[in-house]
Image 1 (cartoon, rainbow, N blue to C red):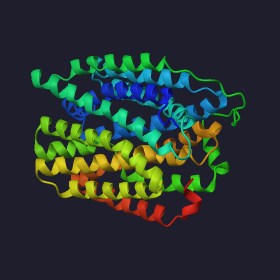
Image 2 (image 1 turned 180 degrees about the vertical axis):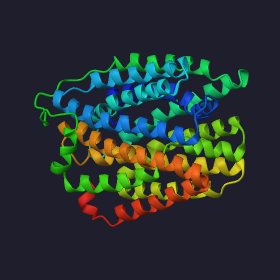
Image 3 (image 1 turned 90 degrees about the horizontal axis):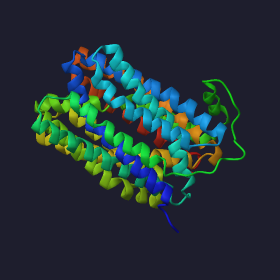
Image 4 (image 1 turned 30 degrees about the horizontal axis):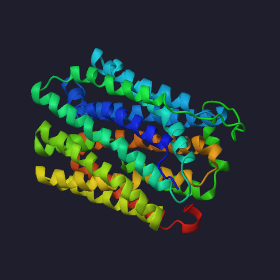
Length: 390
């Protein structure tokens, strides 16, 4: 049986180049924003609003994808908008323009995410689903390694000159769009969802399987703990005082994530997604608890290593777990609803994180996240096994 099909390969390459573009900028965005006058609180608000935008759009476009019985138009346009947002960040520095550019990027993500995951799910079986999603996340993260390496090389020769980097990031973004046109699909003849208004995807909650609702509930609790990675980068910079350490630690995290994603997926297919996922949440607690007290660059690298294992054990597996619980024709809506609720929770998390950091210092933020993550682990642990596991 062929586990990794042509469609999975192409989607993985698309995600890889898109992540080269995004992650080339991600480690420098917090520094760039502070340089043009953004406070930590305003950065938290920016990230929160961006995630709120992507959250609502994921739900709406996921359901629309099911209604149309089409995935590729959403995938292609979504990757194009994200590519377009990169040079927009450097054109002007007015806060409203920056908010607009960041929102464009997140809208692109909202357009493509549910449709792309539905395509991946259609290529998998119950016994290969975690590996398919793990393989895709692995290649996605190869881009997340390559991007910061390119940024590091650029900043070595042009230290502190961030703007040109945003224009460079447009190229791999457009390569991702070009690869997306190699994909093919057959239109679904009998869509499983009816047309509705913008927020009608929320109604899926009532008709969704009980296990889906229980799992999403636990994941949303965890999302309140899991604020933007921007705060991890800011904390790494606070500990080390150096841009190069912050960026190389982030590269190291993504390398661990990329190398671990497929093995974690294989492990989840073998021993069960719940066990691997809860183990990953435990690693999250180790990382955030560690960052609360870390004081040396070596500790930063160690914590980012564990953070890579956490991401490999949760990111792709959560989506594989969810898509295995619903009908194939409703996958876009199911993923869209989950990611919408997750992003709304992330809005709360990012705003709260900014307030905690500003009002009480960085340690309070990381201790708060650790405590909420422990609550999420308890919730998922005590949920009846057979009502969750697909």
